[in-house]
Amino acid sequence: MKEFESFLKNVGVTNAIAQDIIEIATVLVVIAIILAIIKLILNFAIKKGADESVKPLLYSLFSYALYIVGLLMILHILGVNTAGIVTVIGAASLAIGLALKDTLGNIASGILLLFLHPFRASDYIECGSLKGKIVGVGLFNTILISLDGLYVSAPNSMLWGAPIINFSRNPVRRLDLAFGIDYADSAEKAMAEMKQLVESDSEVLKMPEPSFYVSSLDDSAVCVNMRVWVKTANYWDMRCKYMKAVKERFDEVGISIPFPQRVVHIVKE
Image 1: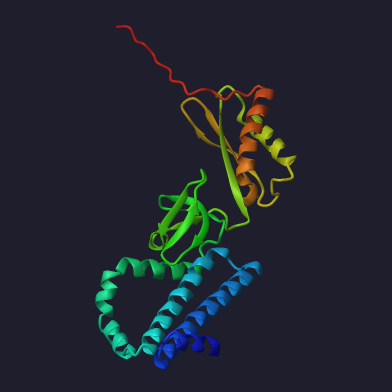
Image 2 (image 1 turned 30 degrees about the vertical axis):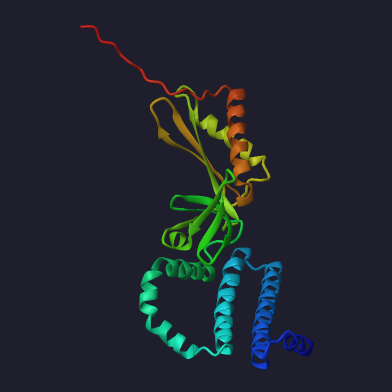
């Protein structure tokens, strides 16, 4: 530090200005060190199991707070009356709040999402028209990736202001499948065949027990349903698996899945 001060004097900088430059540099270095420490702490917390989605929001909050404190300290070093600035900001807080209503709403929503935890990183959610996997919650927006790989940035207030369906939160999920069979075929036989498929599958949970039933009598088919519980991580694989397996089993035993059809009677006068 003394060498840096000597360098400033050698290039013609006065003692007062040199002292100001050194103090400003010290403030900037301290802020950089604190931010680096905060980043290390957040990374360590994530490795220990903390939700990764909260990192952007927390880091942004700490960063902006430090930037404001640093700016006030630098202005104080330069001889600016910071007390007057704070007073003016306080007096203008109502006008600032009205002007930045939406922005402040996004910040408040982000903080509420952080503390109430309706989702975590990598959870798949649906909120209004939004669907996707959570990447992270920022100070103003939440980032999602849709199933087809699209990058989605949504204001925090949009997620906080609407019901959130979290498809990943619970470890198990019910799989509901419906199949329409011909009226000439036996619904009991169809349900027995589905039950046989399920009972031999170790990936289907034994509790809650699987159920099989007739749900409706449609125009061209009897609708038979199966309800089984599976691990959430396997849901889509199991859905595709049973759509294929039940169709193939029905083909093997001669149970028909009819096309939609309509009977038209022509009356001659």
